[in-house]
Length: 503
Ligand SMILES: NC(=O)c1ccc[n+]([C@@H]2O[C@H](COP(=O)([O-])OP(=O)(O)OC[C@H]3O[C@@H](n4cnc5c(N)ncnc54)[C@H](O)[C@@H]3O)[C@@H](O)[C@H]2O)c1
Picture 1 (tube, helix red, strand yellow):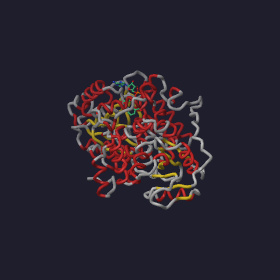
Picture 2 (spheres, helix red, strand yellow):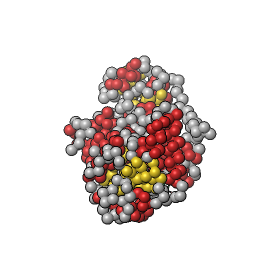
Picture 3 (spheres, protein in one colour):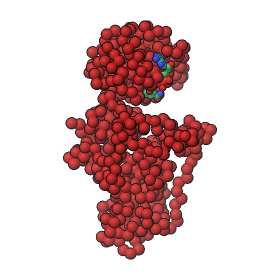
Picture 4 (cartoon, helix red, strand yellow):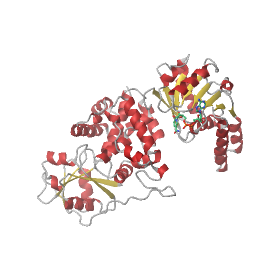
């Protein structure tokens, strides 16, 4: 096994574009002599210059000592030929994202480097095994997938191909710790961990939009305020680029042989064709001003007349308490009186199904999402026949303590329940398929996608049994295999144990 702590460790980075220069920076900063090669003349030096600039800025802000900047830059050696990489103990490639050039590079490197030199690829989407197959010694090849910008995104996926030797994975993981990144070990599967887990959030939000449940800004607000995401799915699409999003969605869906859980939305294609790419084109879902800020989409106006007489389904004590605190007269009977507005709080079911099951009048029924608390935003859902005056009175009542209310059309799982349930379900499949360990999955998603919790901890916070109820209700309503619960979730929910329980 390579001792990555050794003082004379030599690394090499091939390809010094956006990613390569970030990788060079973290290696050099942690004390590793780093050789840099780029096929384009001058590109290696340009990368070193930009690293010097970045480190200089850090020193100006007092976050680095000037002597550390000098030392780090002194460890970076730009070389003019692949042959100069012969002293390397490991080579990380960050060249163009195409299989054949990467295979060719590894083949050429094998003729240059030592017999036990690790060959690692920063590919986001190509098979590590297919790259290794071009090598004499495929056991030394692994994936080493960083995120942009490398010095800021402190996670790296360490990917084992079919023939990767365990010591290679261990050495790369130990090296990641040396420069302060969290290594996440995973199998060579499409999307690895982070891009695979990312199939939950945006695609399900697009489904909600396609169904006409709510507009994009309402969906974003619910997921930020109620479910606690830093950025709504539509704001996130604008940041990453709708074109980039669509191509990742399509590629993952095809690589998983059209698994319905990963089905992309037809909504993005025409928007991409129209040039609505997101922040980079000035308009995506939101419209951006010259200074890059999004134009505000106004909140739904709050009606004046609030409900006074309400009935609340018996399984919703927290909602009953809230409405009573807001000044409503809450009926105590098992059935509503003739003029009461009926409040229900289903898990996974829509308002229509719930009203029919409880034998209450769907025209007087509204539903409130009970899962995410009522503190920051409340989601109010109608049946297709809920009277507008009933909806407005319920809205006014719910907003009467100045908490925002989002009014949506009927949806099995409201907005937040179904999006979170889908994220949890996709996460459960990832660990069920042994792509990564439960702890590694959650760490990767928090660090790589910036979610408030990993998918498994997210499910645990709500309760695995509740998550299963939501998914089963959605599955039964939509009859879509997309929502079939993962075996990992089913077993842990039935056993009453944490979703992080490994086996
Ligand atoms: N940009 C990202 O956000 C991101 C994130 C994770 C992974 N990746 C992956 O990292 C790799 C590099 O991406 P990037 O965004 O840095 O690309 P880039 O275009 O910014 O840089 C690629 C560099 O590689 C050089 N190059 C191309 N072919 C070469 C060869 N055969 N030998 C030596 N140098 C060669 C180019 O001259 C260029 O400087 C790709 O595999 C990409 O999928 C990118």
